[in-house]
Image (cartoon, rainbow, N blue to C red; front, top):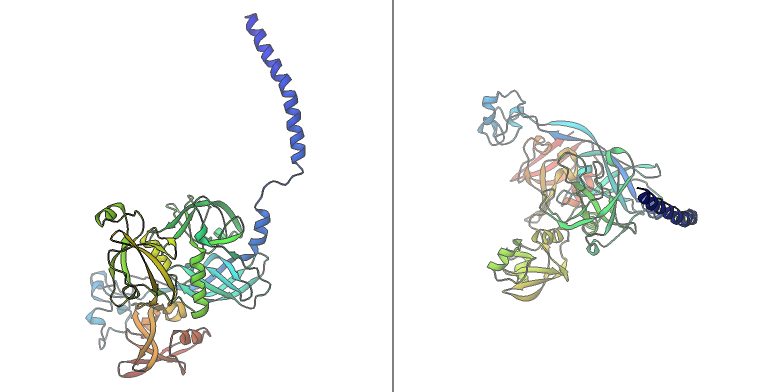
Amino acid sequence: MKKTTLVLSALALSIGLAMGPVSSAIAAETAASSSQQLPSLAPMLEKVMPSVVSINVEGSALVSNAGAGGVPPQFQQFFGDDSPFCQDGSPFQGSPMCQGGPGSKGGAPNKQDFRALGSGVIIDAAKGYVVTNNHVVDNATKINVKLSDGRSFDAKVIGKDPRTDIALLQLKDAKNLTAIKIADSDQLRVGDYTVAIGNPYGLGETVTSGIVSALGRSGLNVENYENFIQTDAAINRGNSGGALINLNGELIGINTAILAPDGGNIGIGFAIPSNMVKNLTSQMVEFGQVKRGELGIMGTELNSELAKAMNVDAQKGAFISQVLPKSAAAKAGIKAGDVIVSMNGKAINSFAGFRAEIGTLPVGSKMTLGLLREGKPVNVDVTLEQSSQTQVDSGNLYTGIEGAELSNSDVNGKKGVKVDSVKPGTAAARIGLKKGDIIMGINQQPVQNLAELRKILDTKPSVLALSIQRGDTSLYLLMQ
């Protein structure tokens, strides 16, 4: 027992003797480092924060009001725009019972006012351009943008693209702005550090950090064109439209969605790549909308089973199942069964990613596609053509006439704006617009295309008198 005690005492003594010099060294190191600045993102953020803004939106939206209009439940299936009771000449046509849509439960949707919060990023200081998400400003009647220095400005919508959830705003009479520098998102790698800045829950400027968790995410069914950056930087409600930046303070993406089964952040957020944003906003500035070029193919993802069946020595790419006749792809010599593996030297990993890349490019864009055809590499040069499905939602032009799909029309030398479709129960339906109508003018001003229509509607006239050509009949539709 005595021997054991001596051993322990000796051990304790040796530790004590050793700790003396170590403690002195730690104290000296602490004193030396106290004068050194710790690593921090603060210097970078001080430069970037003036570029990120908070957006306050007021607006109104149509909300379904099934069962209204006084239609008993057992008779609701008989009313709607497809019902014989609701056709031209029927005494029921103008009643609320016929405003609920085909086979609807009757009753016109109610217009409800709302307020919303979001974020945005200044991308052009001289012109006051701010990029945000389409869903932040959709159906907005008033948009106010607040800067980090406390100033606030009203804003108008320059262009919106629901298919990618991008919108471009312009601040009114704004000066001394700071625009963010935009990075090349094609250079991103999984593992790169990211910083998210936004206005979650209306709290004001909030910064979170993380890494790039994945690239080229698609299949989320959030947007029509998906090629997301996935990050674990916390993105919460109100962050929509905010900035995802790199450690240089450069914009790499616009925060747009989160995977949140319970409504909170679980470390899976998604941002639209900055290169997509640049392509889209440049078209909005020039045309007021996105004029997508069309390649003219249909296809699917290339997986190992399909590669084996088609005898293709590749595991990633965009498999072409069909080439549309007379399309840009057909003119370039692309064939069904080809696999697209690169575009302008950049690897193509999936059909969804390739579709998203094409979906942001304007008419006339030229590219070189790398193909695999029967196992052999082939390069083809392609020029994108005008999409046969170029349309604009009327609600993107003027909230008072939302619910119609519009496109440019030129029939027998008569130019105007064609109504391609009208959703039942919407404002467009209520003022009397019908599929096939040609809008020839507004308030005695001629309209030959969507750009001219937008220019007139941007003045927010209190009364709209639409000059309509319906077949061989000319008429006016009024909205006050």
